[in-house]
Image 1: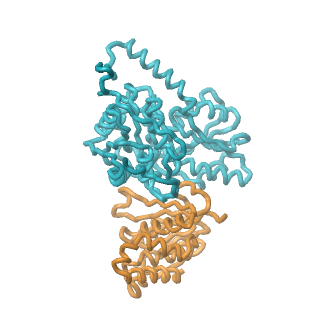
Image 2 (image 1 turned 120 degrees about the vertical axis):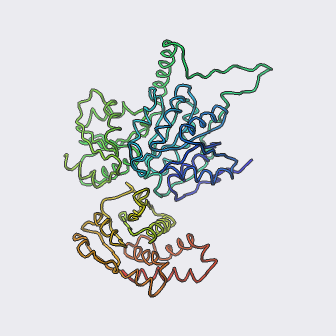
Image 3 (image 1 turned 90 degrees about the vertical axis):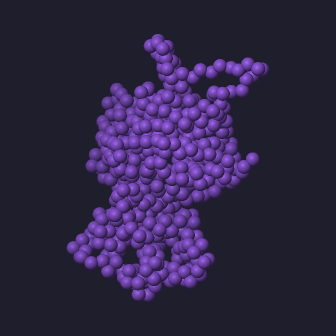
Length: 360
Length: 184
């Protein structure tokens, strides 16, 4: 028995990519499959440096299609497998992940968003929201966490494994290049020491015979008739709807009497938080709402705020991908919408404060 | 609670601004303070100016990059031009005296502009290798984000293995740190 990677809680000062590797170790992942792409390369660098000490494995594949499919193969064989990617790699990853969606194979993908479309920048964006929430030729039966700091990156990467294995919907941790590369402090911990039970993976295929009889498993991503497919997708849709309330996570503060509520996700919500605090200190009625899960989206919670406030200010490092999710969530509301859309670049508290002051 | 100090360090690749930012960030973290360091990275940094963004405070840090710095340190002509956009009315702008042809590019709106002969001091008094440690001394003196002792401890952590092999390097680095502190 190898030692636990994290023996006791400790404060650490790391890059986000290191944090993800630590989190995967803490979540008892068995193997990472991956193909290098900036800005997530160091996840596999750190994983390959640390994992062998704890009996874990790594396979570099020829591309992201293969990384995704081998991850699913590992899962089918009973391993807690994961992968990480970004940008054009995430595009390729949609093919295996739509198979995971169809066959209900638990899977964990960490995405560190970079600029797009295509190669664009290797730096930063929030432009992979649409693709990560609704990519592939499916219905978006996925779970997508959008962390905002290193503590959350650690917490939600651990959580993603349990979520994926519990509900059997593909699960994504949607980080970004800034989170990948910045250094800040967090507390590393062993989830089991905190009473978090880690779901053990089991083989889906190739199981041992029971009483001499080998059971028959048929996992399908091919259907012969339209009706067959229809029944399955409707059932998945119902299941997804039923689990949504317990999966949905969000944060809000100062919304009760707010004239303007800033809606943002991920690293941008750090700027929003600072802006709302600053505006409140100046006596201006600003509020903060942040979906932590982008899929399923905290629609009812945001709708309740939309019914109370005058304006929602939608802020993101893309040309409106989160905004689309928001508009679907609050359909029918008459709240005014304002935007600060900055595709591929960061957002600061200062510019948000200026924007809100201009609006009020 | 003091407010978060925002620092932008910029230079040519190889001048060591990223190492300086990282060591200061680690020193602040060791003191139990909140620190966030992010380099500019990727294709933009190849053949371009290397910029390090550093924030240190007592509360969790907000967005990783910022619009206006409390202190900007620019170590080449291109770095001056690249970073003057981070200067505001309360910013201290520090540049090296040896940089030529930037008279018209210096920011007009800074609270304070400081020319510092760090390149000259490193060449004539110490060793060009510790140029960035002189800068580090200047930054910690100008901002008070970490103490000199904690800066030394962070240097020890980062370079201790080199100091073991050659103890005179320790003295050289410590001297560079002190000398940098004298320059501001």
